[in-house]
Structure formats: structure tokens, C-alpha cells
Image 1: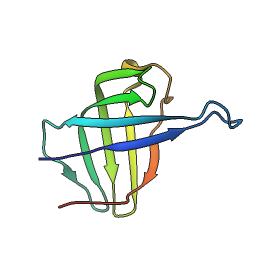
Image 2 (image 1 turned 90 degrees about the vertical axis):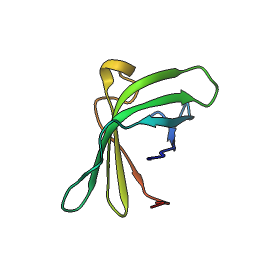
Image 3 (image 1 turned 90 degrees about the horizontal axis):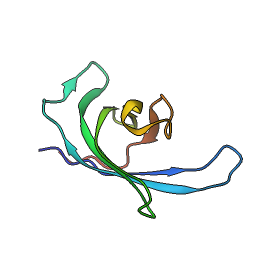
Image 4 (image 1 turned 60 degrees about the horizontal axis):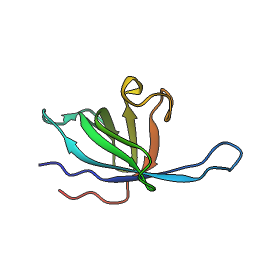
Length: 97
């Protein structure tokens, strides 16, 4: 069983409109793919905004992670251009095995 929860803090390039997204409830139909220096996980997630104004469910999501970094890609065809057509990059702070 895989549990995955993330908080994404976003801000416009000029520093305005700071807001937070919660990524949760992954549905992972296949085993993670272990690559030489990373692990690839594909499934769907739920994305919400801290004020409840944005909600997307069953968003195709690809998570690539190693011991220090995580890259999360959300299918833009399901969420529009809010995150752009790029991965969100972050730091791994806790891994439970």
C-alpha cells in the first residue's frame, strides 16, 4: 500500500497570489518502477486548494523520486494550465518503508 500526501505552496512570479494545494489519496494500480537512481510511480491523485475553491479528482499523476528529490507531474489535460506542462519539484522530507 502506498500513501502519498504533499503540500504545494505556489506564488505568482511577482510574489502575489500565494496559495497552497494539497495532493492526496493516490490510486496506484501498478507496482512502482525501480530505475537505477530513482523510483517511478504512476496513478491518480486528488488536488485541492487550501480555501476549497479548487478541486480535481482522479488526476493522472506521475511521481519520480530519489533519496533527496521528488518530481510530481499532473496531466494538464485534466487540470488546465494551473501547474503548466511541467513537473513540480520538491525535496523528500520523509519516507516510510
